[in-house]
Length: 81
Image (cartoon, rainbow, N blue to C red; front, top):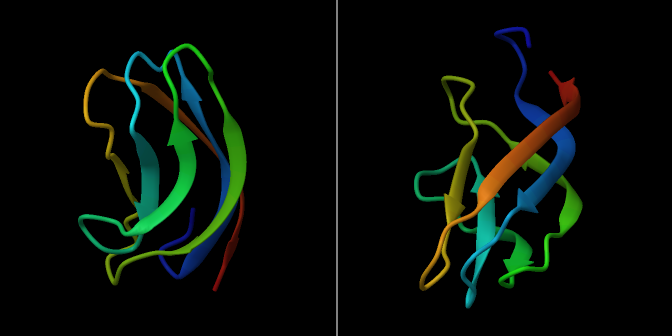
């Protein structure tokens, strides 16, 4: 992705969720505040997302579940300058 990218569009998936009571949060701040996928144990989900990047071109992802873990897959479809 070029350094001049300011936002991205993509798909995020929560493979192998073992916990619940939270969400995958995605955004340009750390910690991110935008929820994309509700996490439920044993029920993987996926969703498209659009997010700005921070001033250094970073995207932050956080698992806000109360317990358990999740594998995260991100596929970037495109970027905006």
